Amino acid sequence: MESSNEFQVGAPGMDAEKIVTEIRAEVARKREEGVYHDARIARAERHNLIHMQDNAELLRFYLATLRDIVTVDISDWSIRDRRGGVAGKVLVKFKTVIWKFLKFYTYRLWSQQNLVNGLMHSAVEGAFTNYERRIAELEARIVALEGGKDGPDPENETVDPVT
Amino acid sequence: MKLAFIAPRFPEAGVVGGAETLIRNLADYLGGQGNEVHFLTTCARDHHTWKNEIPPGEKTDGHLTVHFFPVNEDRDVSVFLRLQEQVSSGKDVSRSDQERWMRESVNSRALEAWLEAEGASFDAIIAGPYLYGITYHALRVHPDRSWLLPCLHDEAFAYQSVIKDLFHQVKGVLFNSEPEQALAERLYDLPHQKGAIVGMGLEPIKADAEAFAARHGITQPYVLYAGRREPLKGTPLLLDYVNTFRLNTQRDIKLVLTGSGDIDIPRELEGHVIDVGFVSEQEKHEAMAGARVFIHPSVNESFGIVLLESWLAGTPALVHAKSEVLKFQCKQSGGGLWFRYYPEFEAMLLALLDRKDLHGQLASAGNAYVRTNFTWSSVAARFLAAVGT
Image (cartoon, rainbow over all chains, first blue to last red):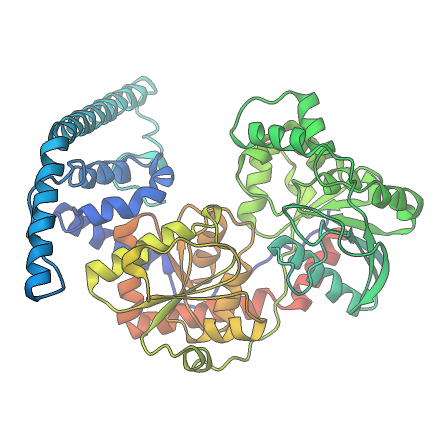
């Protein structure tokens, strides 16, 4: 089939890939400093997890942020009511009593769940680290067996790939 | 030339579908260039029920003679849904079940009969998108003069052997972008010369950048998504990201959504999402012109029409890096950036909001790219070179 697939690229001097690479380098630096280790970010990634599965760098980051939300918060907090006056005070007392009951009856459930969440997270993180190490070893062995002529595919490299 | 275009629905007010719109616009342009163009479609408007709502028959619309044919009403929808579920969940589906899946999909015996009687008089028959029974069966009536316009995505449906065979059976395949063609070559061992990249032309946009914000009382900067709202298009991810962006950076940006579909707005984001629903093309273009950034979070696109429109409206883009097509268009044009995860989304959006020089350069590059490569004359030239008569 005869075809004309010639496309012209955009404005001269505009290299979007270079800008993306620069921003990624800045993000990687801030990530190392712990700037993005935030429970909010872990929650925000819930719909993106499926797209991270083939990228070890992103999965490692996700597991690190997940550490911040793995535990259910069972601490007491300051109970308030937006209404002032006597009604407000009564409501605060009432809510405080309800909270104490709730905590008393569900404490074992929460603490058990926290234990399970913590153990699961540690197990996943441990398995991930272990597989990463083993894959790196196998890649090194393949390179050695092939006489060192080819390194690992940079697109699938586990350290900071630019996809 | 005498051309027949086939799509499951005819795009008109209230009937939206990117692939169908693309096919109709291409057909209409070619009709305006002195070709005799027929558009074959079904009587259905709703892509969930496929109920025959439009009376069968012919009408003239723009430069097209449109033929409406009824959808087969004896299709076994429960069998279709069962098989569709198996296919979409990546299960191994036997060849006979794949053929049944296509048979119980949206089909029209009346359309096939018309093609059998009249098809030989056409220079080319073009049908799409690829995953509908109507496309699959219509292209097999006269495969020697048929072209598939697949709008192919990397999804479970694309991995079925019946689909692979379809790509090989037709005379040629018309793609919208290089990544789409590369995907077909990878999935189906399709010879490179069997495909050609055509795409869709866009008319220049004249839109007042202030009009949309004034009409809707928006006083803060806003980012925009235009299109269907559903998980496959990445809208839940966009809502989560914009919500986190607002909380993390304390920037009061708004998110404007146009298009159809339900959305589940996070509690903290209530009041900061302006959902205007389905709007006219002019209002959509005004929303694009006034947006600081156009965000396209979908990873499943064969051609980013709204992305190109946002560049025509002078707005740079931010897309998901997992979308090969959108990333490719941003990279090739220099009109947008692509993120892989939230931290990159935040850093890139901040850069686009704060760095006016970068914002302007990306917007100009994207605009120049569309005006050079996606004029109707360049698209028609690519189409005629591909169909080649």
